[in-house]
Structures are given as C-alpha cells and as structure tokens.
Length: 508
Image 1 (cartoon, rainbow, N blue to C red):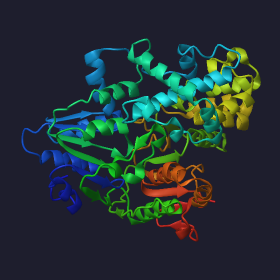
Image 2: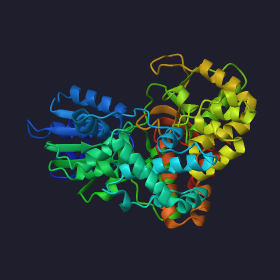
Image 3: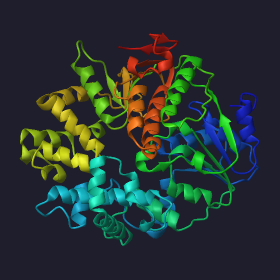
C-alpha cells in the first residue's frame, strides 16, 4: 500500500512519535499500517514485531520481506521467550502439555479410592499454575484463583479445597522449575517475564494486543524502545486463557483505524449493532466502523461456530442430510475436534457410556464409574471440552462412529485443494481469516439470552464473560466480505423486523 493509498488515519499513525495504542476495526489494514510505519522509521532502526500466533507470524514475515524491510525481526511472545530462556538456559519442553491424569500422577494423586476428587484437585492445580504463568505477578500468593473460577459447582469445590489446590499448584510449578518434568509453553514465558529482560530494539510493534497475557504485556511495557500496540478492543476472545485487553490497560496516546476494507456498509452497520448489545451490562464503548470494501473475492464459503460442539453438530447434520455432501475442510486438524486438550477422545466418552471399559484409553475417563460421574466431574472442574463430548454422546450415542467416519470421508486435508465446498471452523480458529460468505451455526448467544444472563449475574461476572460472548459473534460476522447467513434469533432488535438487510440473509 503506497502513501497515496493510505487513509488519513493510517498516515496519522505513521507520522506519530513515541509510544502509541492503535484501536483497529476488523479488516482495517493494520498489518499494512505497521509495515508502512516500520518503513518510515529512520534508516538502520532495529524493529521487533510481535505476532499473536505462528500463522500471523509467517504472514508478517512475508509482508515485511516483500517491503524490503530486513531490519524487522518477527516473533511470537513464546518464540521470543523460548530463544531467551530455553535455548540459552536449557530445559525440557512438554510440547503438548500435560493431561489431568499425568498431572495427578506426577503430584502423587489419582491412585486412591476417591479418584474423581483427586483428578479435580489436579485439574484445578494445573489451572491455578496456568493463571499464575499468565499473570504479571511475581509470587503465587499475590493471586486469588477464585477470581477466574466461574461455574458455581467448581467455585464450591475450589473454596472448600483452596489451600490444597494452591499447595499442589506450587509443587507443579517447582517440578518444572527444577527439571523434574518438562516445561509448558506458558511456564517458560513466565520465566522470561520474571527475568526482567531488556530487549535491544529501537521500536517494538505488538499486534493483536487485545489478547495479550499480562506476563507478556509486563515485558513489553518495561522496554526502552518506542512501543506501538495495535488490536481491536472488540475482538478480545481469549479471556478464558487469562488474556487482558492491553489497549485499555496501557496509558499511551490513542489512535484509531475505523475503515474496514474487507466489507461494505451493510456488514459494518450490522457489526456495530451487535456491539451495542454490551449496553445490557454497562460495558459498551462507542464503536465506529466504516465499510469501505465489499467487493467479491475468491468465492470462499465458511461455516463458523462458537464452539467445537456446535461445529461438530453442524458437520453431522451436513453429512446426514439428503443428497451427497460435498467436500469439507476443517480449519485446524480434524482430529482435534474429537479430542479434548486434556487428551480424552470422543470415543473414550462413548465407550464409557456403552460399558466398553477395555476400549477406554484416557486414564481420567477410565477412572469414572459411568457417564453420570464424568458429567459430575465436568461440573466441578469447569472442563467445557469434556462437557461437549458428554453432550454429543448423549445426543447421538451409537450413531456417532458412523457419522464421524462420514465426516472424515468428506474431509479434504489441504486448504489449497479445490475439492471442498466449505470451510468449517470455530471462531477462535478463524481469527485473522476472511471469506466471501459466512454462515453462522445456531450456537451463539442471542441478545435476549445475554440480557437475561446479565440480570442474574454480578457486574464483575458480566464484564469478564458476557462481553466476550458478544465479541465472539462480532468476530464471526466480521470474517465476511460479501454475505452473512445467520439464524433469525441472532438479529439485533434494531433490525429484527426485516428478513434481509443488505447482504445479511436471515434463516428461521
């Protein structure tokens, strides 16, 4: 993008001096702005660009290289921490983390008669440790783990066993520190933050700042170089990983990019009306979104869901419908939708229900007497992924294996292939992506549902949880370039009387 093509807002960012915060709406060309910003800095300046994840990192490397900017280093927070902590100091990495059963075993739990309680203690100890690693705190005692435990059953369990859970969390952290077990990725990022690193760059550019961890934000804010952080305050969807909206935390001069080159005025207006739902819980801030795009692109189509459960259910309905289903591409590894991050698979949960204990591979699921006991564990642990599996098994039962086989048959392994009709993805996996047509699965919370929840929950619970639910729908809607298809119940009240609004198509 040449200077003649840049908007006045982008030019203001590029000509700025000193530390700044940039609030950029979806599709507003923030990467192009950062590339132009880097190109305008004095010759010989050293610049660090921090990307949110590896996919964004690879794209940024290409963009800076195409611009001939060899003085820009591109890292993710974890790759930067790895270079400074693991590569220099050594240590083993637990690349895939630990399952609850593995944590229970290394902490000496899970072998007694009360296996459910011991697994619950291990699960919460691991979450407590992860909360500490994501925080800016220097001591575990500075945190109250109950602040991030939302489910009522889980809160009761944690309150009753808080001291035990805290002690186990400390032991788990100490085992990683002393090399008795491998380090998690968040642990070596925490070690990096606690080392008070000084990064020798003239400029530091932090992308997707609305989803920064407090640990990485602490590192960033302590640097001597000029700091630029960019993101969209309404795209914060990683609060469950203890992300913090740094755009609202850092007291730097503020700039805005309000023109989206992805979609036109209809989608821009629709996205703005969704954000106004935050008025129900006193968290709305004015959002200016100008649709400056909307031209047809590559003809791509996507089905986006709020959750893995919603997406799998939609895929099942797709392959079990009438006619021969077309090819499907799942964003991310298809098998990841049938496995929880804790290691249990959908087949383990199904075998528990059917009584085929000899076929269960996951130790935690194997340790449960039946599906009801596993459901009880889900309530007390707050494990939403296992909860998803329990609901799927209860709904489809013995039909599941055949339905999953049909999904695999329709699945296309490569995104570059022409053999698939639609991309299937959750909102989290679609972050940073865009498609000509987006169809939303009916698993998002509506305005009416959010309003009812807000009336029952405390203000603190509203701002930390329900706002993120609105953000999920906003992110899903703003993936579309041309057309959005969605259930009628998700329409804001302001447009509820219409069956179609511009490029917004409404179902039943």
